[in-house]
Length: 392
Image 1 (cartoon, helix red, strand yellow):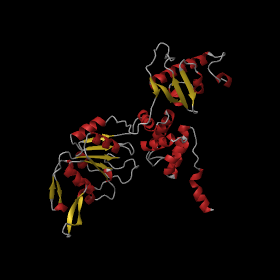
Image 2 (cartoon, one colour):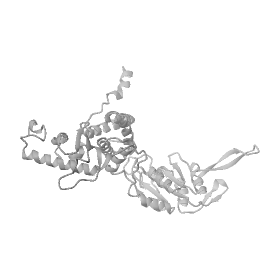
Image 3 (tube, one colour):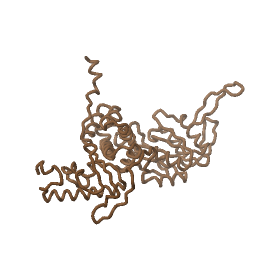
Image 4 (cartoon, one colour):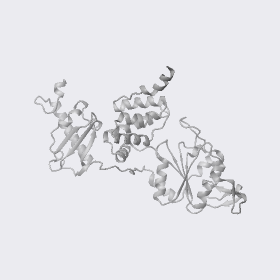
């Protein structure tokens, strides 16, 4: 098919194939309008492609003559659609869809959040004061999910992040010197997060549980059984957990060590320790459609940009531990989306929001993904400018 035949739909010399493509594209546009359920929205070229419109005809969709529908390409990949309810009748034979006046996303919802399918089960276990362990990849939102659930329940939460340097004394409590009212220096026991949460009936949230040293895990094991904690450093105090005390935790591994060799310093958790957790729930990244919704509602960016950022994120996650060694959480996509909402180009926003924070190897891999998905190249020539000048 030569270029003259692709100049538009409405030509006198339309072939039967072109007429079929035109009719098919019209049905797709009606379907898109029905899905959006509003009179103003943006749609990406990928949406048409996925619905079966031939790639060579996508640029000409704006030429369709649909009563009450105004279409205009704002960018090479994003089309603006405005529907006039009084003139729009919907697809032939399908009836007029119920649309609401206004834009698809009217305003930004900074607190918009989508709960994963496991939420209700997690909530029920916490309400019953069960010990709950969430396992999943870095950046999947495990910590945020626990915080939201616990706060919504009206429970008080005490967060604590495990590190390689965290000691038993850091976790349980330790002896320190303190001057009393009479000016006499004496030794006193200062609670750690574990003893504080037990005394005050708080939910103790432990992040990066699989980084904790074995001594901490042995102390925690008795507590997870609901037994009193014997504090030898506080004259053998027997501490009984107050009502409302519970332990929740997050981990990147399932307690079997870093089998995939993508996380550092992960411990193998003792089988007896793992048995003390009444609930172990796997939490993964949001599905792509949900991630797109979060990006759009929190930042107000176009559907096309949100879809592109989500595709990049999923491609980067697929390469984690292979070509890419830094995690790609939803926070990265949100950072880029917020920069785009300032009016920046997607290329500049991605470079400043993500690429410039990465190692040289990850930067190259992410730029390759960006070029493949966004069909645009990111210039990295300035990355080593300083080094070259100093060498000269």
